[in-house]
Image (spheres, rainbow, N blue to C red):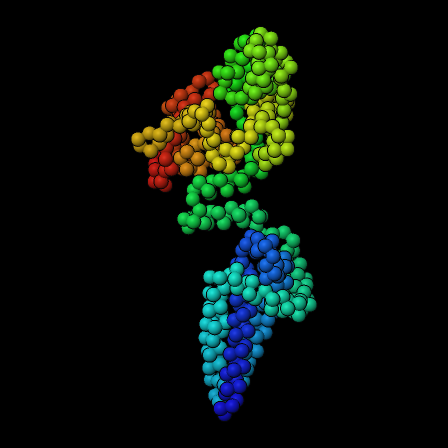
Length: 430
């Protein structure tokens, strides 16, 4: 009796060990960091290369692991039932065998290996990549047949199991990872906003970050050279649009460096300046251009300034490379910039805001989450939600904030008071 018991015990331990390796491989492969694996592969790590190859056909890999795992566990259960039934015949033998295998499989082939795999997913995946590659090759034809049968069975129900399309887009996966690590305290709020800003570039148009035409500093090309130089020096920017007769008629762009070079060439004689000779051609772009495309266009054209027009060719504003970069890193201020204007904090936690302040600037300043999909400015958000141009004194509650209209000039909201995020009780009272 001792010899069969030893043989059975050794065989069961071997089967449980193999089952544990299958369980660890499944967990490690699904939790391994694709980014780290790709980086290690670029550095010449052969194990990481095998992991990436397995993950390229994740359905086949998971199928092979599950097939092997179930084969081993079923075999172990059958052998245990057969062995115990010889000593305890009948239903009680089957019950004892079921109880023993449930405990052994749960502890040693499920919880223990998967716990280790979760805590060291990358290392376990790399360690098991070689034997798993062999198993996938051996069981591949069987797994492929099973997958084909499953698809045929589900086809009448209109269920498509194609693995060509990822369940989550890459950007959303990155965004989710950033949000998760931020909630865990591992990513700072500033870094979270910067990473989110990079991901948002492709979803934002230049119209959302441009300087509106009402706020553009322009120069009248018909002014005398002396007056043009004076206004150019007074302006806070180095690139200034030139117009003739009316501001919609942009004829070019004047760069302060070109102006200084021309002054030096004329030995300081302002009246001898030929403004037309140093005027650069203006770059016009449609307002529907997204920020990612425009950033690439700026880098390719080696220029930092473009005028934004609508579908009818009417001037809407201007956008610069700095405007796009500020969507990633926040406000960039130099010695000629003034601090962000239009946001004044109040003792009760609310803020008085100029209507022209953009929602993204307000969100950055206050760490809020006001939506900016349907409006660019705070005033635009209130008008969009209220579906009217409200009068001074009116109060609205939108998106968990209370908006009070302070001033209105003709059809433009010029000042508002925005409360801190309200609690549910305060919203219901409002």
